[in-house]
Length: 359
Image (cartoon, rainbow, N blue to C red; front, side, top):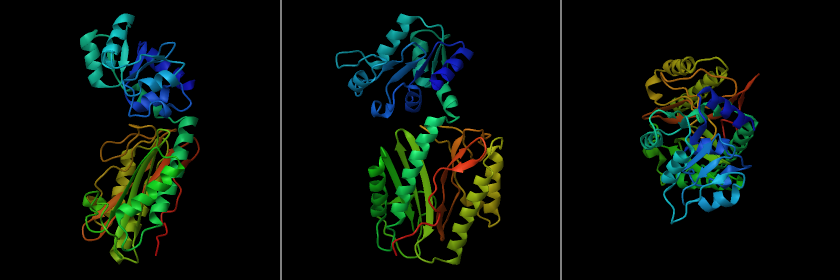
């Protein structure tokens, strides 16, 4: 498996024998199973040890039976009610094997292992995050599937928007469609009316939509572990000239950001161009968050935010999500999932920016 080969190369370059993964994205990425989310259905195993002939699983009590029954090609250290804690089981295993160097992806556990075994043999580094950055064919298929379901969800949610409907009913429509399509977990956050200054009280699900409101819906889902993430914005009715200008400016900023996303481009440059677009209207101060975060199984890179951006590479998957939240006018944000390929940069989420509403 190419993922395991790259992990072995990373371990060898650090003169290490094993990688202890406590973070669910790393566990899902390296585990040899057709769909590891069927096994690691809760947030994560306590730890998975990679680098030996067989992966060693320290599941913790809640998913011990699932790991024992479904991970037949791994060594599963069962955790029954009479057994030691998984932390103690891991420490005992390490003491019994006398490894020369260990890499751990979580600082707290790394410190505990250092205290129990040796200060000199433990390196705390999330090498999984680094290796997961360049998306492989499995990643891309997972992200495309998640993007397709996200498109369905946001389209369904916008399709019921009309004066008099609650934000809770809007969210429920999107959630239902995405659950039916296979989403494991869903979050649908409509923001409407007064208070759309970012994401404060505007996400009150009891809030009732009125004609003339600006509305945007941000949703996030996971499908077989992969994140689907999309935002769409609109105006309930014709709206004012200022509202239409705000919405069009955000769409223009998205185009500016997306069209500059290519290999070798530093994110600070992209962020600066989006700020420049908003600055032409005197609205820079209302752009209060990042432009982009990584996509994948979780905790992914690259990112683009004010003063904290990465240089983009082939194989990156990331969002593009400019937004403005202006008191007295309203809030708008648009977001797509983006993949940077060898030849082209691609929008994985593809539903239109201007989605029809129910009136």
